[in-house]
Length: 305
Image (tube, rainbow, N blue to C red; front, side, top):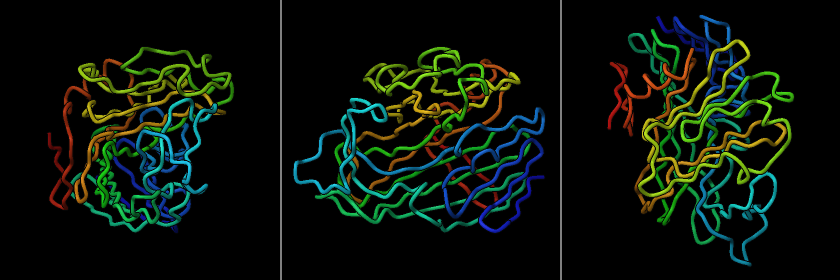
């Protein structure tokens, strides 16, 4: 039976297949670093956190009169030659400080709901849009679900939510993992990530009309052989994704990139878990393919297409 407890700033979850923690103060959103532990193998994530939320963006270049606080830096090794500009700030994970939350305990699952209103924006936008995240931890499987949803107070032609998916990979010269698998690319040896390179040099995913991948899976194989994977169950919602080295493997992902009018929402459901093969990942993805939203109540949770 899935159980939950609280310990200072951490919510501790345990199912029959894994353990996980959610941090509500400090570095917030998603599942906290190193806390996702597989009971079958003892494997754990190598991340700074899984399903971590950042800020709102749009493609384009700032006006010359944009204040320094709202200038998005690009054209460098960190962000590559990919022009974007902020819509709303701050970065949730590092600057929100403390998130409100609620916990639901249902039959054979635990769920955690967190939310935040961005409080500043680049002109001509206003701050105040709402980010929400539902994390559902079911019994009987080696994965959890994350539903991130943004409700905008602005009208934006191509509104983007940036996040980490499944999470960045901490390592020393590739020794902690064997390879990365990107369903829209292929397998990549860990040795390809020994030296830093910018996100637009290798393995960059950018959504193209009529070329949406059949499956959208980003994963890495630990030295034990077990894989940790993150899946966007509706591949069409992914706007852009990075997989580049900058002292760690940066697994930034962006969702949306669509017209959102004032009062409208967009979001994505991700499945993150441990797997023993790429084929197993694909089978699970195919079971839930096309999921766009998730409903969570004490009586149960459901996925909706």
